[in-house]
Length: 611
Image 1 (cartoon, rainbow, N blue to C red):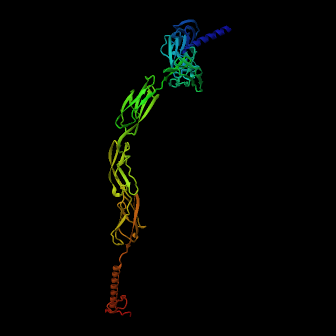
Image 2 (image 1 turned 90 degrees about the horizontal axis):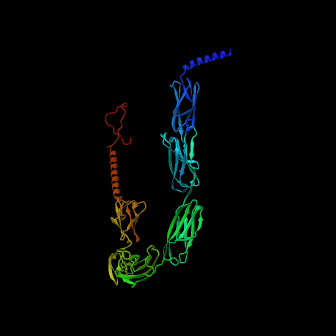
Image 3 (image 1 turned 135 degrees about the horizontal axis):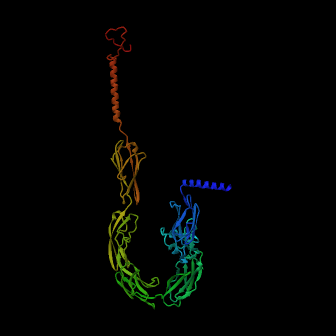
């Protein structure tokens, strides 16, 4: 009974399930899989279907094919390159694609770079990777102590061939790179699949800094001197200083230096050597600094020389200007070839490499130096000098500093007029100028200078200056000054240079000045202008003054008084006349009555005097 019930239920599930499936669209789904794999690696692919048993199709070699009613499984062997595997529905109308890629890991990665690098130099790191696929997924990098300092990617479209790739990187070596490990690294970036990496061997580099040595020593050493010559060889700021060696040689003789290493990395070697037995000539002093397999040299030329000696003769000790003198200078050194001999006239070379030298004396100087100088051509500072003093005679000559063309004599102050001429022997000068000069002696004078070689004349314009004379004040008009009239005051004084004028006038007085204060103008004199007026004159040699008193008179009132008296008399006479007539009745007053009063007679009623 139970068996039949289960069979019927299964039948119903199949019937109704198929009917329901026919109503849904068919879907093919590829399950998660490994997209990348090494060549010949087996990859398992799975897919499911909602309508029928799916089927896998691919160009890759398949194995272990399994199917269910709604699923399908297959193993494929990867080959190098990009491939696809497609899962189809039973009728082939529905499908889903699974991309596949077979990669080839690098067979080898190499690094090529120098292991010892000088600071500040540009160096090339070359990385190479061999037999890798695919190129688009390849990334190469350079690391320093595992830190990436440079990386590159490559062609994105090459999915067909296996490649060898080279990458170069230029970098400047620094001290911080010392003892660091450098390597080249490759990565095949396979997405969610584990990346494939391969690295080169590491190169541990040493960095160094080796500047050129600086060598110092005496370079000119006199033959036969017993003193040792010191030397110093300095290599500044070496890194690492503890690895530096210094070798110092005088020609082929090794010198043992004292080595000192300073905290700033400077390495210094010092010492001395003897040249007492060395013949005359040029020698090499060499300093060699070596660090690792690198070396830098510096050389210095050291010269052993014989000091020159000379014999210098000047036949005369006095010469007239523009005459010729012969000087004799002989080089007495044993080896004369490296030396030159010069004869100098007042520090200017007159002859070169001549035993006898003729030159003309052309400079007006009481004495001149004639010098013989023997010197090394390569180093003129090594020299022997002999000098002679030659006295030179020349005719007189006037110059403006010794005898000025213009001279100012101040009366009563200047004591001497100085005029001289330069000459050798000393020239005598005469100008015929009066012993005491007055203002009337201004003139042009002639001065004459002479010695045994000739005479010369010059003109001197001599001006006598003097202080102001006592000034004179003149008044215009010269008569009495009435109030309201005008008056002018003029001040005059004789002086050289020109006088400056100023006045002292009564307080509160207003005047006008003219012609640089020489004149005072009073346009309308008042009583306030009365008083003392002082004229002051001055120049750079002295001052002077003079005074004048001015009195302004008041107006004449007599005519006015007479006129006033006459007017008063006339007014009094007129008043008496009026009074007389009034007494005679010829003159009176009248009363005017109101019209309402009693009418008076039309005849005139005379008024009585006081009634």
